[in-house]
Amino acid sequence: MSTTILVIGLMVFFAHFLSLQFRKTNIPDVLVLMMVGILIGPLLGIVTPADFGKIGSLIATIALVVILFESGTSLNLNILGKSLATTGVLTLWCFALTVIIVTLIGFTTLELALLPSILLGVTLGGTSSAVVIPMVSALRLSEKPATVLVLESALTDVLCIVGVFALLQMHAQGGIDPGRLIGGVLSALIFAAVIGVIGGIGWLLVLGKIRDFPNTISSTLAYVFIVYGATEFLGFSGAIAALALGITLTNFEKFGLTRFDRIDRNIVPLNEIDITFYREAVFLLKTYFFVYLGISIHFGASHLVTAALLMVLLIFVMRLFLTRLVARRAGYGLRDAAITSMMVPKGLAAAVLAALPLQYGVAGGEVIRDTTYMVVLASISLTALLVMAYPLPAMQKIYGRALGKSNESNDM
Image 1 (tube, rainbow, N blue to C red):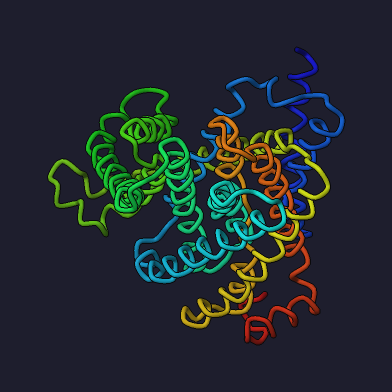
Image 2 (cartoon, rainbow, N blue to C red):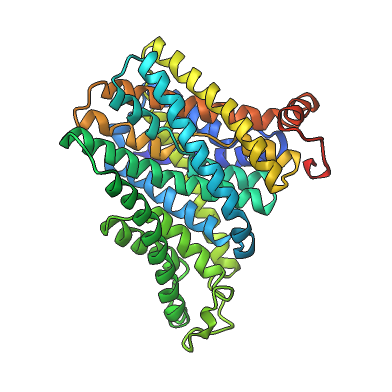
């Protein structure tokens, strides 16, 4: 027990050091933390995911909720409105093309049947909120591309989750109603967002009284967990609700919520102490989440590794050309466009969903799981390496040519 406590303390200081190094060297802390998990997990066998029991997956979920809420509080409504069109194009096209690429490789190279191949494609269709949001924050992108990337990661999580469960239903029942599938996606998004907004209004109505109580610095975060849990219980996306709640609290004046007589116009939903507390919570949860993710990775056979690497390379190439089209319309500078093209890491949602086909008895379920874990590792590693290498003049020239842009002032 004493050794465990010692390691926990050392990990926090190590994570602080990695964050400092990220700012100086562009070596992402999430990659190093995941490598630590791989070292003490799959390689040395010191710990296994089973050692954490339910706590490991619980920490992963809490990390996702807190990261999404904190990112929602930093989104400006004006920038959000301007970026919705770009978000929609980037999200839907990148998701659809990723599914197609992975499905084809799964069907031809891994010799999976059509349904398992599509399952693999949908599992890997999104980007990871837990990876993208901390990196976007540390890299200090312009507001519009930062907002697009945050929203994309949240929306694709929903698409992956709803899509995988729909395909598993198809496997179990032998068919599925396309209308019901589309309705499920839309309801998961729209109703979750509505619940998040209503939850934000409710919290604004009582926040003034809550602050009269002692020890309430964590009360808003506890409320976020309540909204997330209630939304998931109703069958919608708790992640989207947490994001919408954060957006509502910091943009309530722009939403026109000051028309409610019981909402104080001068209320500050999140003061400096609250924001500092949430950022520290994100830091701690991120640290342990990525170590746990590294511990959870399974290394499969060599042909799975080859297929996973091929998937990642093709996805990154596809993303690069898709970003060129999107960035031109949105008016991105070179650095913003280049970083946007790099942000396709897979993470928490993919890792969790990858285990479901095996549980449902889908043929090739083990291949789906092991391939997904390898893609998670390879995609995060490549994202980290590209971000680290981008400041080099040669890399900027390559991206400038690929994206059809010159090295501009915002690349500093």
